[in-house]
Amino acid sequence: MNMRLGTLFRTVFRRELTMMTRYAVNTVSSLVSIYILFVLIFLGMQRLSSTMAGEFLNDTLEGTIIGFFVWTFTIFAYSDLSWSLTGEAQAGTLEQLYLSPFGFRRVCACTVISTFLLNLIPHTVFLVAMMATTGHWLRLDVVSLLPLMAITVMGAYGFGFALGGLALVYKRIQALFQIVQFIFLACLVVPTRIPWVRFLPLSMGNSLIYDVMVQEKRLWELPPMSVLTALGVGAVYLAIGLIVFSRCECVAKQRGLLGHY
Amino acid sequence: MEETALEVEAMSKTYRERGRQEVRAVDNVSFKVKQQEVVGLLGPNGAGKTTIIKCILGLMQPDAGEIRVFGQDVTKHYPRVLENMSAVLEGSRNLYWRLTAWENVLFFAGLSGISSRDTHDYFNYLIELFSLEDKKNVEVRKLSQGMKQKASIVCALARRTPLVFLDEPTLGLDVETSLELRQILKQLAQQEHRTIVVSSHNMDVIQDICQRVIILSGGRIMVDDHVDHLIKLFETRAYRIALDGHPSSELEEALAARFSSINMAAQKYGVEIKINLSDRDDIYLLMDMLRSHGAIIDEISHEDIDLERVFLEVVRRERDEYASGHSI
Ligand SMILES: Nc1ncnc2c1ncn2[C@@H]1O[C@H](COP(=O)(O)OP(=O)(O)O)[C@@H](O)[C@H]1O
Ligand SMILES: [Mg+2]
Image 1 (tube, helix red, strand yellow):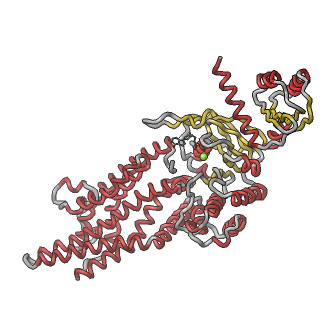
Image 2: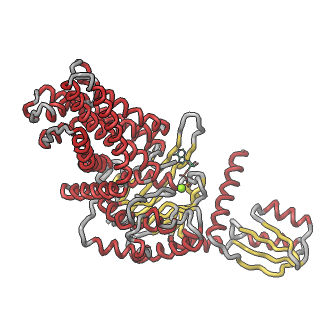
């Protein structure tokens, strides 16, 4: 079974890779439009800086670059998941995934891990583009960043599972898909100095990524409590998302909604 | 020892949705399918075919009933039991349109843990059997309806499961493609030793491919019999009688009162009677009635009968019984 689990992962990864190349235009164009937004904000900040202290601009700029990077990465992760659940239900491929003897859960886990890994490529290019535009080079400590990105994105996957599941049962929920992007944005801009903000999705992870990229700390130099909080919060949001999803899955199996009807 | 591939026992499924009327889609259905048997589920739209198939596959939760696949209880052994079943579902895509036919085959086989290179020969054999060689590396969205359907079937077969469900495989195809696909499926059923359950609302499809047919109507099983046997049974009871001259109105009334399935049509020479006799001895009664009213019989023959007639007859009888049962 373990060896065959490898087969399952390779199979799913290959599908995601192929789909990514087929849909490359979509990925590139949405990243380019976010990049343009970033450039506009950057220009605005430069304008402002002529009237303010340079130090202030530097701090804000670094925060903005990281915020944009984490934001795009998490909304891609989230929307990939929620849209693929509902989109595949409507197209009719979801039922075929449910027919895998490995079980849908394993198939889903492989999908999530594959998209996480594959999304790193265009998003790193995007990050480098932002740094090149601003001339601000931040440290890319992959060993410290990868685990923190994974921890941060867990919350986003929680939302993806919850809304994707709800949309299987209540089709109209799809209208809410976009709103979540703004919730994420809000979670990324509120400062984590405020105690309860630590329990928002993404916030803590984002702040730790900032510490690694700007303060040049390594993962093990970060305060352990903060890392554990980020991990715990991510895990809780993911767990809630999975619980909501499996409830919805149950209802969908009752009413025959896994396929289009 | 056990040679039963599929066993469905007392399965029922009612769709309940707020604000909508309940639909009893499957009503206490039981049947068995032997290994290597090719069985048809025949019934009009809404008869419950798709619901039955999805409940067996665990894509839907039945309200009641037990389902065993190769002796294993489906609920208890889920999802491992899916190593034994694959399906092409009705009306949905079943495939990724942005992947090529070949990429789809590799994906769905891999989803079942099948990946080794030795299986490529088999995949190629399937692709050839369904004449998709030229389209193997074309994105599915660019294929015709018929080829998409063929590619879906290839993907299901590529999983090499001993039990395969094909839900309305010829739905939405033009006559020619439908005929071609039926030919291929027939060949497949002969070459491969798989158990196949085909559903259709089209009798020709079932008659072409299946040895046995289960006729469904309103979520219930009307008939479960061998196709040949069923046709023969009805053949012996379906008569066409030509009368010389027109029968008296008394005779017409008497016949209509006695035989509900009678159909009389005026012809040049007189009248043609078509009748299905539910009781073997009824033919003598019919002859008696004709003779006592002085009708002259020109010709009596068995009528050619296909599943379509069988089906209509079964549904008609069911309705009659239902009506009489309720008038008491
Ligand atoms: N998901 C569903 N929700 C509500 N009613 C359904 C659903 N699926 C099927 N039905 C109803 O159940 C009955 C049987 O449908 P179905 O199993 O699709 O029959 P068939 O495949 O023989 O056409 C029909 O009356 C249909 O309208
Ligand atoms: Mg159907």
